[in-house]
Image 1 (cartoon, rainbow, N blue to C red):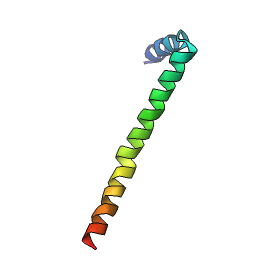
Image 2: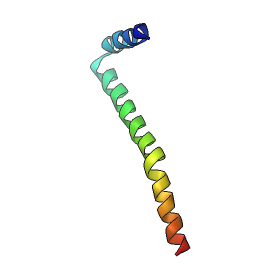
Image 3: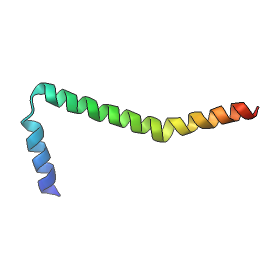
Image 4: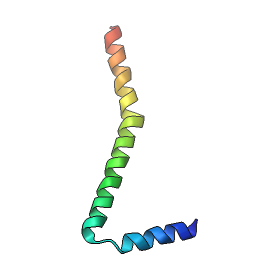
Length: 54
């Protein structure tokens, strides 16, 4: 497992600044979308269902 992370670290180190920024941006977008999908969306759906019942 340590070899895996070392190889990723080496590949990331070889990237240009532009590529590093793109990888970081994609990671950020992925985290935000997961947060929305797993946490916020179910609560928003629950609120919507509660409003319809009233």
